Amino acid sequence: MIQRSSPIVEIVQCTREDHRVTNGASPRASQALFKTGRAAAAIAGRNYVIPDDIKDIALQIISHRINMKPEAKIRGITGMHIVRKILSEVPVPVIQPA
Image (cartoon, rainbow, N blue to C red; front, side, top):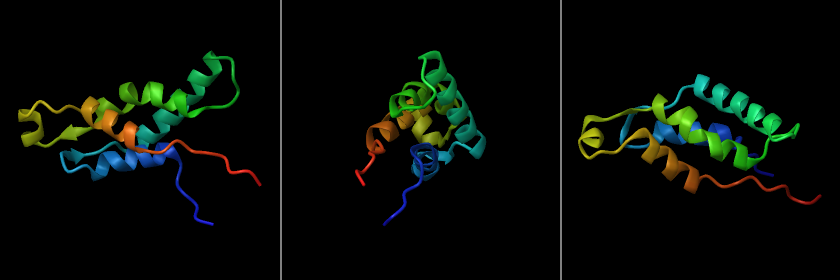
């Protein structure tokens, strides 16, 4: 069985691998996304986090932590563009029946 990393780790890792980015999100961004996801779930009255919790907050938590290359800045690309693209590409985790 192939074990995949968590969606939070995948999202943050993808910010580091984008060719338009000089510095992607840090491990502290992963921690912030995790903690804020837990808070969003608690506000919604749940004691567990769902993928939508993470997707709803990822733009605000991660986009300002990305440093763009000058060429990307000139083209008007922002951290929000990068995070939106990543969120559309990272698959939502699915629980496989036993």
